[in-house]
Image 1 (cartoon, one colour):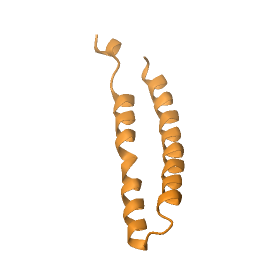
Image 2 (cartoon, rainbow, N blue to C red):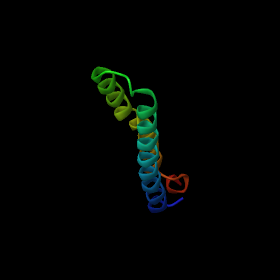
Image 3 (tube, one colour):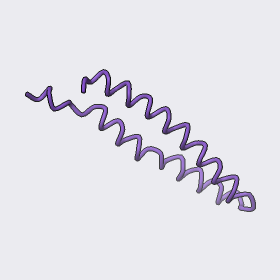
Length: 72
């Protein structure tokens, strides 16, 4: 697969990941944290704000990996 196509697909996936992840994190926060204190809110949003980086790293690593045809 050409690098330009992989970068296009990866960019679309990253945008979708951020949108879907933000919606899910917000729904969980509204459903579960309504009666919690500010420290629990801070901890939840801190960790959920960092957690999306793991799948994003995988997508970026896939985007930058050279194709098998380029190695020949």
